[in-house]
Image (tube, rainbow, N blue to C red; front, side):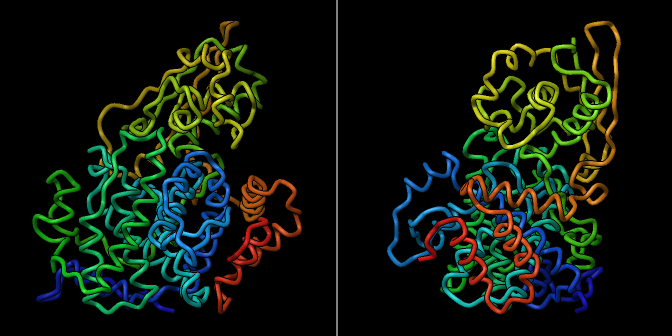
Length: 471
């Protein structure tokens, strides 16, 4: 397929909102991008399944009213209305902070979009190509919307995954349900008024709830538009969404931000996580683990650690002295200390018990993050800048390592084997006895879902493999 051609400047009478709506309903997704959409869909679904057994998600499920005959969850027999199902799935997708990233907009693109789409699969037959096309369109809208505002949006304190994800989710649903241009425009405008989320809630249950709210509100916005609720015709224009969420810095869609040429999913691609924590921790983890392995050091031999980070790199790392696993997902000192002590970072690293170890708590003050002066204007700069870990040893020596390629980024991508191992590990968090052959069979079928006439059938097989009823 050929992607929709970019519009370098507005045609007479055509607004950015109209152009975006036209892209949602008519933009063609190249086959290469559909294949990459399958890859991020499988990865996101894996971490969603794993997240579904976490205590915050259980608490959310207990707060929702079951709805007989509605959408079942992946991990239990309860059924919920589609918007509540999206809320629950969205929180599960992000609670482990193991889902993919796009540093173009400093956000997690796939989780809110896929979470809004999954409840729809139980109501209609959706082909793999339709689902993957909606994922590609929704994430593209989300990311380019963030690019149009730059890093300023994130720096103001907004959780970009939530604010951008609401609109991206609405766009994905509009695409899947084949809305016309006017209904799509209204869905986007309604979603723009339902968007929200603050970085201040990082390290709490609300951080992952943001993704659920984005998915749920995006789905609701699409449903409201479908029901005929009217909205502003030019929500992205003067005094609209862009100005409000950029703190007045941006009031027009930049001419150099175009949709689908290429898709961000294809170029530069999404960052898929090797470690289940904030992405700004990954380079320091990689550097610390490398020093531990190559220099033969551990936490007991270390006197002090300094981590040099790019401008803006510490903004999400708001818990230098974490007391819970959720806090630790956003803690540089803990990530370094755990890497040195354990020689690994995985799901077990972020339990409350692991974080509260006395030997760990006692060393957090010995690890400092130093951010370069200035303020980055682009999230991609934050994501690609080098991170240096310098370890001063108790014997007076020192070792250092600089990591320039972020783990899981397009420059150092997850291999298919690594993705399969992550998939299996996540599924076994729900069903520990799940056989490797079954898990890998589901993984392969997921990557090939673009050829399936019914995505729901694969989802049903996944539920059955996890020991959950599909009804």
